Length: 599
Image (cartoon, rainbow, N blue to C red; front, side, top):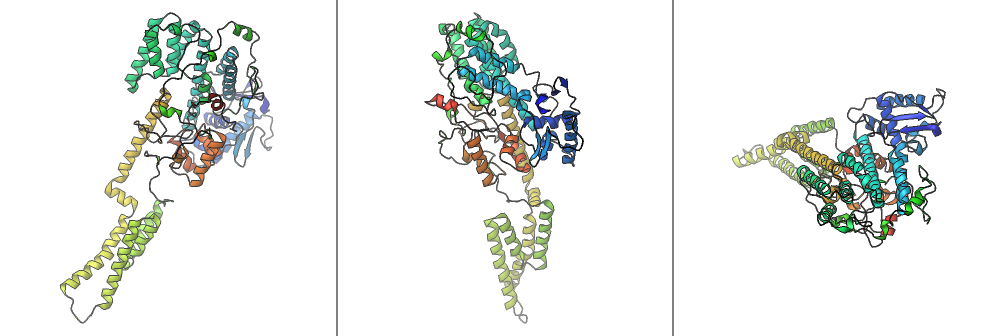
């Protein structure tokens, strides 16, 4: 039955069996299905489903609730299945629940493959075919994905799909500009600029389309709009490409309206590659202008009149390659996806909040720590201070503290002195005032001071006295707010990734992003600073990224490198999953193709 099932998540969530729409049931059941659709063809652990569907208040019997909703999905997806027979579409494996459907049955997968097919058409010179592919892919959208679903999992998936759609829209606008269709493009760009107000590539295309349409004053007004918006909202100015185009429009540069002018933006294939890092198709060495990947044919065949129509258009833009816009020097750092170029020297550990704090390897539960404090306090009191050094030595070994070790040695020497004084004391002779004062001092040091020291070693007690929990909580809240601000800036202003080196603690920068780490771009020595990971897990993450390519989400990272839920929770707040940066080398063709790596 799975071959006749179709699912829509690019808008309101819907499903069909043949031509009949399926009622997917209540909201939480739909959310469970959405999690499975995000991992089509891969098993999803029950714990991951609970974490995604109930991010803030998971039910106490989460696995049983998930099992109930899975049973409901089986009834609607396989209505002809007997109640006691195992599911064929939605089955339970050792690794979790697996949705066995053709990836092409999900509109998000068809959209991504259609965008990649358009990129291959464009690389081979088929502008009209690329436009047809993009039109078919963009027509799959019917609204915002995952409406009504909350939580980090759905937010990350929604942001990724919206970003991929924005790149596809920018690429389509660029292809239309290259085809000389600037007049009909102006109206479309007005709507896109309103939808994505700070995407500079859309503003660049809008200004260029206006100028080519003979509307120079409106093109200059469009620049003033984006300049005012960026300065008022973010305190920054437009990028180099927009400033250069503004100057050329002011000078009435004739090259902007003759042939195919310089746009100042990278090729659309490079831009599309940044957002399409999870689609497994790769172009082959075929030389004719057909989609190079035979296993992933275009979603819609190119129209028969497309090739003759292309002959009437101006020559391809490749004949006059545009110069790249000026970007910061760190934008040329190679991505870990290309190991042959990743020859960066290892730098110092990150100075930001991603460094692991010095703490116990396995923090004790509160009740265990409280019991240890009570028992450790009673031992010095009952032994009159002679056993204090044992308690302090145990704390020193547990916390691996040299200072506590030295303190234990001091208490031991004091206890030895106390025993020596007792053993050599002449009971028939009255002690002098100095001897009595020394004896009372030694007893007080080992007995009362030692007991008080043990009490202060309790982290909760020490934190209450010094106020450190409040300070740490305030610091963590400040870092969290900075991370949220940086994520919002990336969402509204994608080029800030390069301009402010967001998620790159290994690079010199003045912008504080709260300790975000772009796991697809940082070198391996930054991975060593990620909290909660063991050395073996860090090596596995680095090797998996090197072999299989970048990660698209926290769920994909946890699936490819099995991580405990506690570690996933700690990393979710600091990791970014951005497409790898574009490489600029003397051999762009070789780098653009990249190694053929499995996804």
